[in-house]
Length: 196
Image (cartoon, rainbow, N blue to C red; front, side, top):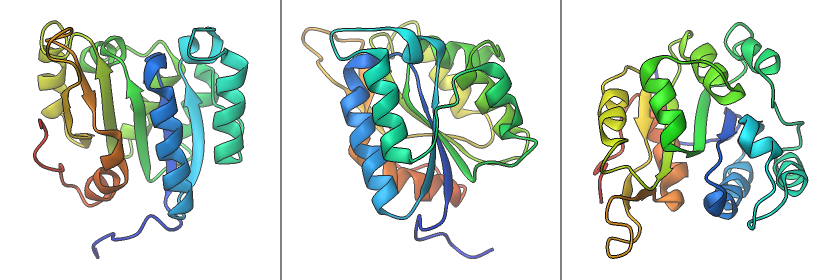
């Protein structure tokens, strides 16, 4: 199989979890993926699709995702279940991925549209790319990150501490690396270094 060097025509599911403070960065990367020719479908966890926060209302976030992608949001488990059987995506990006969702993925728990989409997508042996955003990446979530790094077809966007003085255990993906990390994952490679 030849090396994938372009995202043109690549079908990507973009699954958003409730790290609301990173939504603007996620939307920015969705715009870049779309500009690179990818065909995007938005997916949202229950919290991402229903909670109003100081970073925007649920309605605004859904509208933004749908406007960028040109498709309706997958926001229920029944809508997410066909992801695998219908082979809907070449790549699934969880962006942002909270510590809560990483814990569920590491434990095999499927109780949100995002975890169902990941489970359904992985059944086809296709890549999942995680853009982590959690305040406990270097404490409670560290074990789950370690577990996920050892699961076939799961890759991480390189991440780093976002505020080592005020939040010394927090780490967030370098969202600007998502297009590059996406190509690496499509080629079966983990972009390095994982930890900046």
